[in-house]
Length: 450
Ligand SMILES: Cc1cc2nc3c(=O)[nH]c(=O)nc-3n(C[C@H](O)[C@H](O)[C@H](O)COP(=O)(O)OP(=O)(O)OC[C@H]3O[C@@H](n4cnc5c(N)ncnc54)[C@H](O)[C@@H]3O)c2cc1C
Image (cartoon, rainbow, N blue to C red; front, side):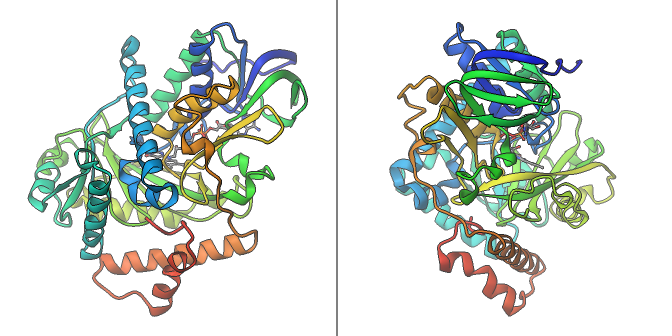
């Protein structure tokens, strides 16, 4: 699939979208679906899907598994509203996958979140209580240890929670399919065309190195790069997530009896998330990568941190010991955009026609579909079931400025990691680590809270 030509000279459009990840691509497709007459142009700094969208863990779920945080941030009605929006998104991606038989490895097997220590097991009660309060029992099912083991046998798995609505996908295949759909819908796509600046005039003007775009509406879907914008910076921090991929291991998967399509995760704060692939590999992710400083989303430690890769591999060997001798084929990492309340936000820069989506907080495959719908509604000035969601309407808490943000988040991350690793080995973490790990709760910060 050759890259689209870069932008050269002037281009005029009704809507210009910057960023060819899931958020930008869903927005472009939604706009053309709703208003085929609109002229839409999309520019991407590299090639579509080259950011987090093409290299994530491929676990796709909405917000039934985040009710604890969602209720605290949004209240019961808000939490239910975003959980339902997550269902609409699953339905939207399902429809996209089945139209034209797109081979994106979309598999709806649910998500099984397992406790592997007694501390993790204690979290199950509060999750189920929240689900009962919201009348959401059919979305959140507690499984006994025996039921967990029947789905995937592991000596460390205890009880778990099963979320039936979840799915898995091959993320790069989804990105490529979306890119093709966007082209088919008549969007003008320019790759290898980084935006150098945007002027919020009437119309707006976007500069690239060899051209510019004049457009009435602009959508910024550039993920962590958005943290450089002054109105977003106080609400967004950068973390990182790492993944290892095993070589194919069909016999080991069969002997664990992992024959269903469920994705899995544990109940750590810096969780392990994992799934099988169509060719019998296991992808194991660890959401424990280092913190970024300020808006430096390109720092090397966000993509090349050996300790985080080792943690992902250790998770694979501990959680699935049948795979202890299976070699790794690949390992990689990437930056994630974590909002101050750990929920995404889709908004318009005040007094402009510039709209943006960010804050996916490591959980963007489902939520970027919602972003595409919400951004299309904001662009079209439509007050509908999307633009009235708390993702668009809530006000956001602020994070401390640098250098306090980086120093504080790094210290809390190290402390939580020390506690979680000690817990897995049945040891006590050092008292300092235990004290620092409690700070987010004491100060009401959402970072470090699951
Ligand atoms: C290792 C890893 C594992 C993850 N696992 C999961 C998971 O299992 N499930 C889940 O739900 N989420 C997961 N996520 C998060 C998820 O991948 C993201 O939330 C989601 O892909 C964000 O989509 P996006 O379109 O906003 O960003 P991106 O896919 O990063 O797209 C942004 C695009 O903007 C482009 N861009 C940036 N600046 C400019 C510019 N100036 N001009 C033009 N273009 C520009 C970039 O090149 C990029 O292609 C994971 C993330 C990582 C890194």
